[in-house]
Length: 314
Ligand code: MTE
Image 1 (cartoon, rainbow, N blue to C red):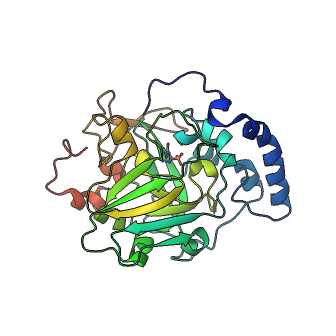
Image 2 (image 1 turned 180 degrees about the vertical axis):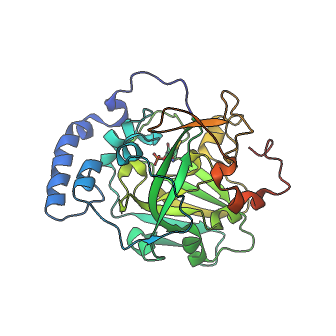
């Protein structure tokens, strides 16, 4: 991640002035819509929380960790979503302007039945589950997050991947009218997985957190969650999912290829070139704890990497 960053990121750089000035009015309007029983997908996190936009019923998953979830406030207030600013508090402040309904996701590339899905269709593809997962950021902090989602495999199967498909590329929404225009990363944000990683039952598309609709700063309306990889693999606010034959380029790898590889598996034995990955600080805790191989999911995923040199394929 960016260690050096400008101290002042004026809101005007993220948001054109009329929009910035209109934000307060917008939020008041959104609040009124919520009070009137309107869509919660475009409200601010506090409004969504206050109105408790419950997603349910939710099947508890045996794939959840038994650890206690990190506080809601930290999960939804300490975020990386660089399109909305590089400070941890920026996404919660700025992402409210993103309209997440209507929302279409194109699932394309090497598939027998490529097509676009409306977010409401996607929600009907598979039962929603609560998946409580550890999230380990490459910046050496971690959280435990009670996501609501369903296996990515359900969406991929719906388009029937061809035998030639070996990788999956994820493309995030990018709207320069409400997002950072400075090329901190090569927008739009993109990420990628090998097809077998994408089809793994631990890999989910999340639409909620804490039993409620996902707040915009966490990647509404649809974001990837891959719990054995560093957090940056989990692309937010996805608009396209592409099946490819070649390994796709990824935003952080393009920005700093020696620091961020394609795999980005959580690995305490392979340091980031500028800092250790051996320990982490769980948000809300004081003491550091050791980082676990594959973020504690080795039993389920280590076999995917048999014979692969994880120092070279970091
Ligand atoms: N997706 C997009 N589009 N833009 C981003 O900047 N940041 C990544 C990832 N997904 C990012 C993104 C990083 S660095 C992390 S650690 C996680 O989102 C953070 O997810 P959270 O804010 O829900 O905890």
